[in-house]
Length: 155
Image (cartoon, rainbow, N blue to C red; front, side, top):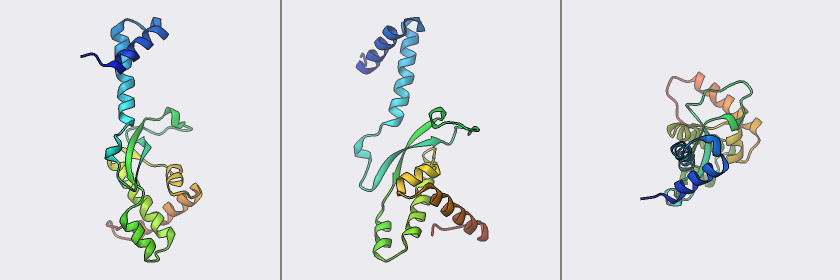
């Protein structure tokens, strides 16, 4: 059975880039495009209340000096931006900084489990706080881990 989107891509590649090669090369290009697109799309039925889809840096992409995000392998991850525990903590009067730290650590773990890494800028955007504050909180959390044994719990 013919795949309409794949066929449309093959036709467009053949038309716009006639020197790229024969139709099997254009089909290969179309398949690669579809692979990238399908990797970034998730059905809205998979996203629950309080969750967000976020495009993160792939854990398989090696960082480079002055590397731009456009030159980085990306993956789409599903994150719990707000949970019942976050809401209850807020109602219980837990300081907002502690709630944000818990959220940041949780989302970093979730992204990593799905093959992605969140940057300070990502967390800044998600939590709606300056990226310098994210960095400060991360350093504070790291020092806490160093001062404890090898096991830790999210504050």
